Length: 77
Image (cartoon, rainbow, N blue to C red):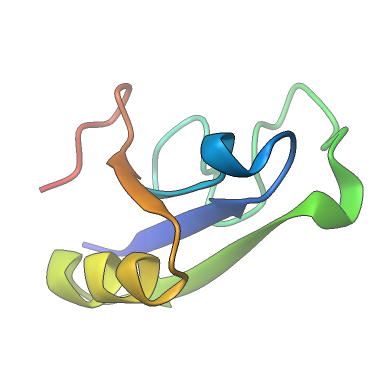
């Protein structure tokens, strides 16, 4: 199973986060983002990965220094 981390620093600092996704998640789309929309945040976000396991992805998310979240759609574990 592959994982990606979506790192966002859009908006105010308290809203910055790093979110862990399964690669097959509709919001992740293997690190390309939602296929039905364009990334409106531009350079204010990036995808990290792929990672081969959840712990690697979570460690990468933690290393960003941002609040770590898990995707509510795919529920990675």
